[in-house]
Image (cartoon, rainbow over all chains, first blue to last red; front, side, top):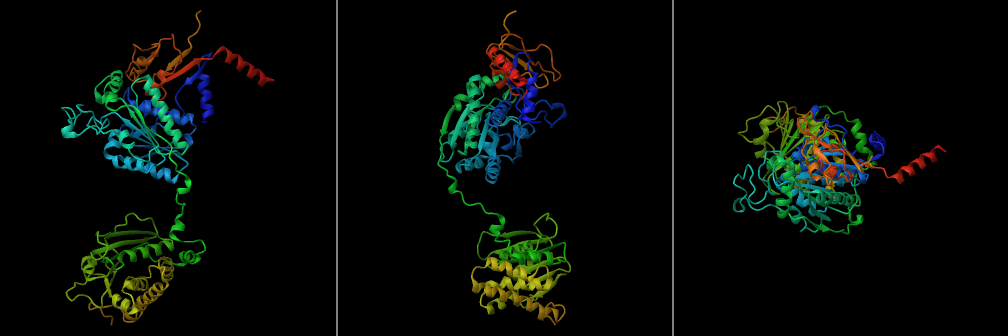
Length: 501
Length: 91
């Protein structure tokens, strides 16, 4: 039903001689599908401030004509079900992470109006980091912070905003600053930052202040429509149930207790000079990966290569600096260019060199469930420690490529086929120890035929900018393949001592 | 008969939770909680039928999206203008 026809229906309902001036906003759903018995009511307690805040937001969205452009990010807390009420785009974020989600949405869809709606447990406790950094980056979103000085949904625990002396289930004697610190003033805190454009605190405590809140909410959305910048409206709101008060008394308590502790004010109202020219140019994934449409070889390869597996898993292990992770990345990039689903999962310590590193590579014709590989089809062990650590994980009938001329004397042979290849020595002879991983890649491709050597070269050509190094890589790839050709193919299976007879 | 009230309020008893905020907020105090219970077991708000000005304060104080609808008397001038419009349309 269009907004026009809805308005007409409501117009028709007006008694004779009267016209409708205030009615349910079309930004709300007609009925709420959460529970059949509550299809006409929100799940909020009688007298809850969320309902009023929702209503003011809905009215602003409607009046500014933003319904089809709005994406509402619901938090965790009482307002977690906001998506049952607002007939706009909806995302429900993990606890405290609404500003981070809103950031992502706004950056990917700059033309959308993105609203992050959060309570005080969500925004001021678990989500403190997210809101501070979103504000500090000046994300062009609107944040509505409903502060009722308590955890409502979970049953009345102390929140960061709980007043000094206020009793809660976790401060049964009242909040004591010596033990629990002082109430957190988010509006003041955020207004110390450079980036926010608009910071105001309002209260849903009486008629006059509700109308002020209405203007503030409208202002925040106008700011976003005009691309002004980060807007933050803190809304002091009653929580009759947890405060143990009648709705009317709870609203009065906002005025008498919350407002003195959280002064109402416009803390920030300015326009920053953020011209769009400072934005980095948008690049597509194809641009970033440098796969141009003219690179037809990659496309052609994808069609031609009959992969002999449904899923093929490779574990590359060695010490940091051997190109362990890079080899994994090259293999995933190759898989991607051959039209496979791929994953790459690295595991390494904080050291950039030495220390042990390994990575899991999965090549698959179907979507990959987990990038973690417990039993790889292939292990590329670039040193002895890795061989001893991971050899037993390889599936029976799998392949182990070991970067040595022979196996350690006391090594118990696993069920997998072991191929010893002195890749480091081969790389040294070619002029750079760095290409050890490429020698092993050549051996892998020749032995298992999981991916095409041509793809390997096209990936290397993209990745390696230095021409002389690229030439060594080309030779290394060929050397790895030749080693398998001359040592393994000719002489059947390699033996425990590492020699192929 | 006296002149009709400038406004009217309709309360949807399927939505009203009987919190009483509208009763408290209404400037001319023309709302009250009904003595009878609604299907939800609450005393819903109810327009006394007199002295509503159509200010809309109750609408903004009410936490439920659609529990309250506010109507305002169409000014005589506007009624004439509308009739003129429809007359123009029929021509």
